[in-house]
Image 1: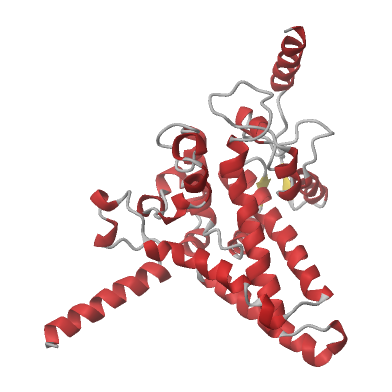
Image 2 (image 1 turned 135 degrees about the vertical axis):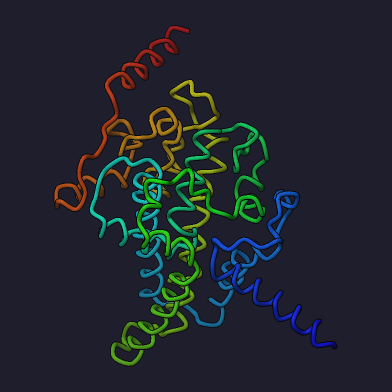
Length: 324
């Protein structure tokens, strides 16, 4: 091997490492003519998560580990639904710079990338919902692609900062977005350490570092990821349509239950800027209830309501259906 070939090989390795470490780094592998290609390395994190769940057969289970997985699913789902979605994507309420940073970090533990990438992608979705340029429309691209395949496509990896200029003005959010793998790694390490400490000091819980890592990181994160991704896919396929929107969004109570209220998707596509997606008391929306609780505590404020004319439109649509 010549010196030049060794240098070239090291350079290629360095570029590959940098692409993983810094999501804003663009190399020639993301050239425009390759934008639509499947990028196998981008599938690696999702394979890693799913294969990691199989470690449960090695570490076993305990009530504490299962409870921790459920708890982490719940509070991280809220970080995604309440902040990644309703706050960063739609500005449905206001909060402090510290609080937005805390929930940007907490949402990042879900391995759904940085808040700015997530929000810019979602804003694009609302601008082009179920059109050809929609990145994850099951109507245009089928279930599998809209559920997970789009995440492995090269053109969908970079963050479009032009769509998120309001929050890109905060350097700490840009930093989290660029280095979006570090928080999940740190989260996994912390879970392992906590489990090891509990094994030593509270052995009656029956857990340990490996067990808490597998349940709290792998299993909880996989369920959380698919719950979120089902909104991209199934909520444009299964359910009812209260509003005649320009897309195929649907209300689905089952999806609403597992995503803390995100399943009222047709409501959301009719009026995306409201802090609530369950427009009526019988539409279960845990995210909204938690946001209301935070507003009472003064942690967030100016929650945007559903306008009266939207309710009038819903009433008119219901009456029209009853007459036909």
